[in-house]
Length: 122
Figure 1 (cartoon, rainbow, N blue to C red):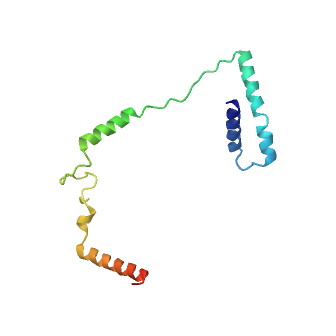
Figure 2 (cartoon, helix red, strand yellow):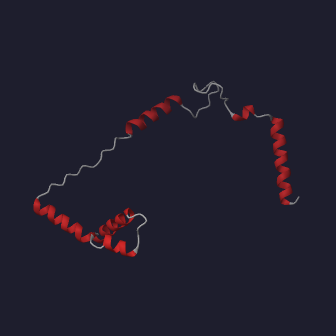
Figure 3 (cartoon, rainbow, N blue to C red):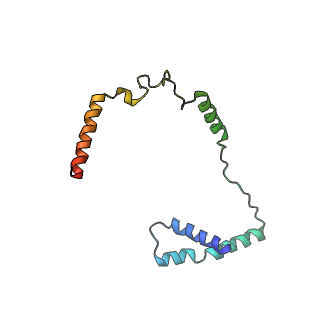
């Protein structure tokens, strides 16, 4: 377990080195890491240094998620409602297919079919 910790500390220090990762530099920078950690722990214990854990607090996402869930349940965006419009986009049609001209679609499909057939050698 202690060895895994030392290896992780070494990896972290190697990542910080950036482009300067020659063999000599890596050996010089990581050679004393295990000893330095032990010296620091001994110094802290003998001098009575109080280590206070002060992790960064992360605000809970639960209120935001609950608000989103409540809004989605109220609006029901996945149910079909033909009269529903988006206030910020009044000219938006219900479906992009509504604006599609059938003759243009047939012409496009025929052209693609001919293209595919010629690629296949038919």
